[in-house]
Structures are given as structure tokens and as C-alpha cells.
Image 1 (cartoon, rainbow, N blue to C red):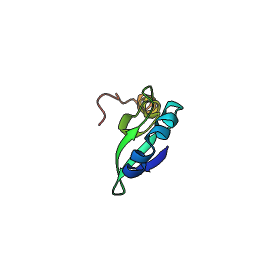
Image 2 (cartoon, rainbow, N blue to C red):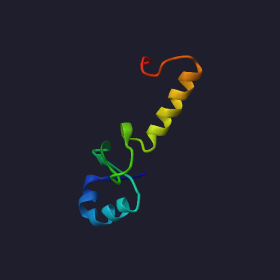
Image 3 (cartoon, one colour):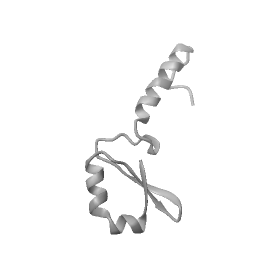
Image 4 (tube, one colour):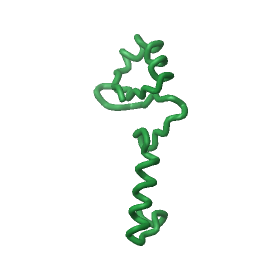
Amino acid sequence: MKTININQLQAQISRVMKDVEGGEIYEVMRYSRPVAMIAPKDTSLTRGKPDCDKCIQKMDEVLAVLGKDPKTVS
């Protein structure tokens, strides 16, 4: 994942979009704070992290082994 500030994004939008088409993910920063993500449409960005769905699935498997229902654990 690459990080880019808003001014850079405005100046380099064509290059950034080409990178995104190629699979790159960008975290957009404003005043040193993350405010957005730019990613290919088919990318899972659950809670801002790519491949988080896989992590959640593995956590559900661990909970099942422990005898806990993933839907009731908060």
C-alpha cells in the first residue's frame, strides 16, 4: 500500500489511477491523517485493510475451535 497526500494526488491523478488499475492501493492523507483509500474495485477494504475478510474468516475458525459462536462474540 502506498501513501499519498491530497496535493500529490491532485497533481498525479492519472498515474495514481494507472497504478490502481494495476492493483495498487493508496491511502490518501490530509494534514498527516488518513482520510480515504483508493483501491481497485474488486479489492476488499474491510476496515481499510486489504484481505481483511480472510483474517475475519480465520478468526471465526479459531472461535469455533474454542466453542464460541462468532456471531455472538463482540
